[in-house]
Length: 264
Picture 1 (cartoon, rainbow, N blue to C red):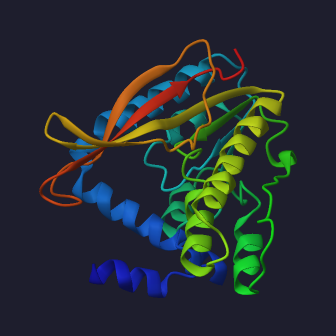
Picture 2 (spheres, rainbow, N blue to C red; picture 1 turned 90 degrees about the vertical axis):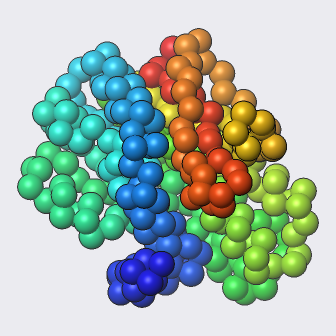
């Protein structure tokens, strides 16, 4: 924990992203992966396999990965060999990611807020505003010319930090308002993906399960009521936090959905 705190303190990052928890989340994911490498292996492999399946169905032109994160689930070498232009899109790129792609001439990091909400929500709360929360928006131009766009373990993560910032810092919004805000972000991302001219691959959790051994203690809908509609969905389980990661009594797993062709 001390190492994570020190990295958070010393890693350059825009102030609003650091205060909202974006940097902390990336550091925590990296640390958890270090502890749970074996438990995560099958999930990361399933992600890479599905992305390559989607890539094999398009011409070798341009590809964008939305939510590229720490590149744990990105088949970077294979994509860089197949496509002439590889865009890794996220709200913030860690120094280790910058270093990893530095030698790949056809791979570039694109910094973009895929909700268009982080800075606006930060300001909304800081300035004590009430009324409607900011609406999601994104410039499709960053990926509109891509032959393949991958939304990677991103859909259900997009609402969490903006919603958490409002929940923790503004008493003006009740649970229903926060859920509506989150649902709007999820729906907006799905609509954005469906509006793109190229092929779209979507990998996301559909359900979170808190378990005690074989007993399901709680199920959580990370889509906030939104639904995925696709002809073919591959399913698997991501054992993201087996005991004692959270505590010694429970396991947290994600029920995953992988769609190689969202519009097919």
